[in-house]
Length: 113
Image (cartoon, rainbow, N blue to C red; front, side):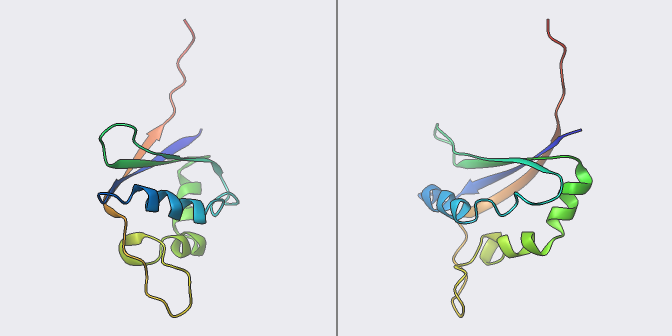
């Protein structure tokens, strides 16, 4: 059964574009993970400052394996869990998020009326 993991990231004021740029820079990094089914970055369209990183996984074990992988650690290195610049000898870039929470959901299939 597919599970959904949502990382709710509260972005620093004015840092939403940078948050999107950082995710674009590592697009596809999770695509080959066993059990990975999909990814979406949701940008708020109202006055909220919380961005949602939505991923779908075959099961909890697949997600746990990804979180424990070297690829996950590489993508989340640097200050505050954000990716660094990736340049040798350079300091990590400052975090764009001030807070994040991981939410977990099962998809509930409801019968059609």
